[in-house]
Amino acid sequence: MAQSGFARNEQWNGWLFVMPALILLGLFMIYPILWSLWMSFQVGRGMNFSFGGFNNILRLTQDPVFIRALTNTLTFLAIQVPIMLILALLFANALNDSNLWGRSWFRTAIFLPCVTSLVAYSVVFKSMFAQDGIMNQMLMALHIIGDPIPWLADPFWAKVVIISAITWRWTGYNMIFYLAAMQNIDRSIYEAARIDGVPAWARFWYITVPMLKPVILFTTVISTIGTLQLFDEPNLITNGGAPSDSTLTLSLYIYNLSFRFMPSFGYAATVSYVIVVLVGILTFIQFLAARDRRA
Amino acid sequence: MSNPLALIGRTATYLLLLLAAFISVFPFFWMLVGATNTSADVIKGKATPGGALWTNIVVFFTSVDMPRILFNSFFIAGVGTALTLLVSSLAGYGFEMFRSRFREKIFGSLLLMLSIPFAALMVPLFIMMANLKMINTYQAIILPTVASIFIVFYFRQATKAFPHELRDAARIDGLKEWQIFLFVYMPVMRSTYAAATIIVFMANWNNYLWPLIVLQTNEMKTLTLVVAGLTSAYTPDFGVVMVGAIFATLPTLVIFFLLQRRFVEGMLGAVK
Picture (tube, one colour):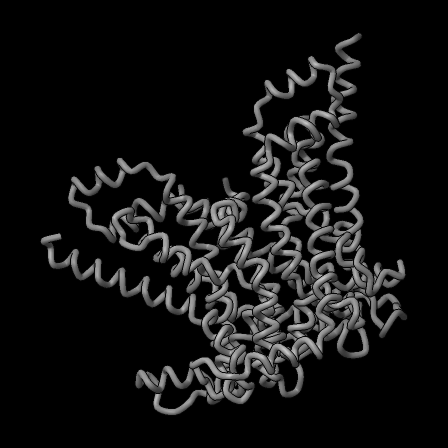
């Protein structure tokens, strides 16, 4: 009898501790995401909704601005995430060598960009990539380019600027995850490989990378989710997707549809569900890929 | 080191790291130098300190109500952080210490919810806040961020290392569950709290999209919004913008250099 009273008490206490968080998550996450699903089937402007069935989804397929935003977002994802993660892995591998001179200095320097606010660094990048700015001057002084590049005025180079900016901001962040994981790998595995004459690149490829698989998966997933939601940089560095929507992302488009033009919340919700579906599919594929390679 | 190939590899490593370090640090240098130059000089790529620092500071402080803006930023980030830590650590502790099959299922579904993008929430959240007449208020910014799944995870992971004997001893001493949390758990876990404080404060301080949507009048704006506003002017005054950028970066930079180890610990929290 006393036992069951204690057990009931435990149950009660368990709920009390988790309840505030669950209520808030219900209010500000589950309720809005479900509401958003309902809204994605509504058409109309401002606060006047009416049921539109699959009209919004049809509109997606015929909306050139949406197609462009989707293509841009996927381009950023496909190019930026691999570059950043490979760089992070290389830096982490180099810094994992305890004989390296100035190791903690290098680590701090490469990590430093993570400390900046997105807005502050976007501003700094915008000024660096001006037509007569420091970037063009340095590249011309080094004879890498002959003529100044119209970084922010050309659709291709504007994408390059956005990709460089995000890579600058997040490489150190991912590097820290890899470094921490590398320090957990048993040293004796490397010693054994070294004695057997395994060269450094092979030790990296056949020992380090497989051992880091869970962390690589984790960083790939969070980078994918982050890049699919890209907003701050294109809004600030390229003034909301300029030139001619070449850096317009899905998040920017949702923002424009809801808050910049005459609001069409229903359609914005449909676009936002495209991100939800993409995150779901890509995360699923990444988990599958990680499992396959292990087998 | 007698092997010439190893020597080449070593040199290449140092060159790569030096280049990476230079690229990482250069924008900070550019921000500092930019604050001392006129806007025209910043755009022209002048990389040497100029004499416009004082003018830039004066223009910044006359165009921005700095005490009010700083109050907004610190209030939102400070209160938001305190509430997030309280609510999320309660949940992390609850999930780990009081296990039940049903709660484990809920915890599992939280894992899936971690991948819900904010972009999908912003429209309904905005309409919700408009219906509640909370547009342009502090609570509209703070409330949706308080229950952080990431921080709940972080605390649950950390709680695994919390010695159960302490809880048993406290129970024998007749402490109630909330007292155990408040007087035993929280003091013991203070380094976890410190690390979580850093990441949550930083996220709140730097938050841009949600405040951009919700905060609409100048006297409610945060420093992040003000700097962004100066940048998106038709012809931004870059010298002044750099002064703003320095102010926006300073708090997190200071925290980073004072508590470097905790800072990194906090970021790693989720995968430990």
